[in-house]
Amino acid sequence: MPNDMNLANMGHFASDIMSFIDKLSGYGADLAGGVTRLLYSPAWVQAQHELQAMMESSGLVTLFDDAGNLFGRLEGDDPADGVILTGSHIDTVRCGGKYDGAFGVGAGLIALSHLRAHHGKPKRTLEVVSFAEEEGSRFPLAYWGSGNVIGHYDVFHVPEVYDADGIGLADAMQAAGFGPGKKRPAKRTDIRTFIELHIEQGVILERERYTVGIVDGIVGQRRFTFEVKGEANHAGTTPMIWRRDALAGACEMIHSVETLAVAFGESTVATVGQLELSPNISNVIPGLAKFTLDSRHADKSKLEALCEAIVTRFQAIAADRDLELSTTEWMNAEPVLMNPELTQKLAQLCSSKGLRYRSLFSGAGHDAQMMQKVCKAAMLFVPSRNGVSHSHLEYTEPEALSAAIAVLIELLYDLAYR
Image 1 (cartoon, rainbow, N blue to C red):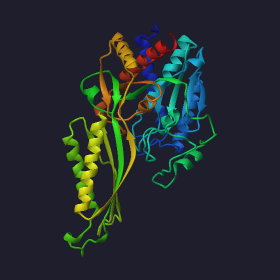
Image 2: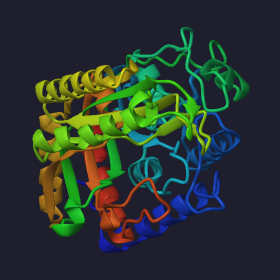
Image 3: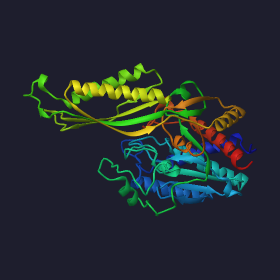
Image 4: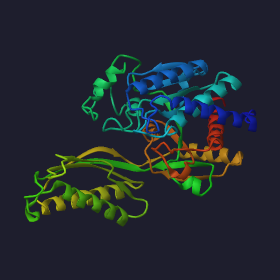
């Protein structure tokens, strides 16, 4: 292990990471609080180029790929030995927090800068990445950045998806200066290891008073959009027994989601987070209701059973109310286990530093679950105050951030310099 990892350095890491997070939060700062930095938006483009400048000032060689992923590279003695990658994403949800994703990018940049300054050129190449997109907050797809890196997506065959303003993903990408042949090809075959630091976005670590969490795996997710069609009609002249009220049907469906999820056990979660009505007029019976469903579980078979039960229940409600139901599934991510060798190394490093830690499953999706498909991957969590995330109230103590960065540095040193 490096012999320069003392308390003074850890305090320095705390100052560095807070400066990084605060600076990056200026790109997309929302007047209502928080940060709105959506994929390929002007704020996102500006933030990526600011990161490029930060990486270069730290002595790293920078590269963009066609999808907009940004890499900062510290070349090793043997490039053929593969790349050890760390980082996360910088896109946000609307009015999101400034730590989500950004912490992992900043931690990676600080780690590589520290290793370069104190240990010089590594044996194996190190890179830090700012993935283009992870959240799925602008377009109805997620992991566009890491998905391109592993070949799950391809900028030459862009999904026909659109944002709330009707702008297509391909057009947004081109307008931001990316797309086929604009930069380096996005798909990579040289990455051997991926390490991601992230805030927990939950309450476990804080409530149980752990400094860090070692992620055993990431739950599976399935996301749907349901469209319920009835008949719009006059609110005052249409008798209740003859109505085909799309909203009333949707409400019954949504209520059943909660009932079914609870019945499947406490590790099950299902959420309806978006609802749209048409014509959305106070004195007109809604003729159309459109809503989303986000369902998650660590067990693939239980997740499938839950979704099947929900869809079956929705169909029964629609039939009973003489409504039409259409279902679109736009995300199906299976549960993913992190690499046991890396999680064991993280546990050893935490123990050696006297850090209080525990293992846990992530209830949120992360780029690490995509990267695990092509390389060894691991994640380290830090506590989230009150479990709050995707909010301007998102916060983690600087001491926890710096402790996780110290662990990351030692892991990268072990992987790249030994």
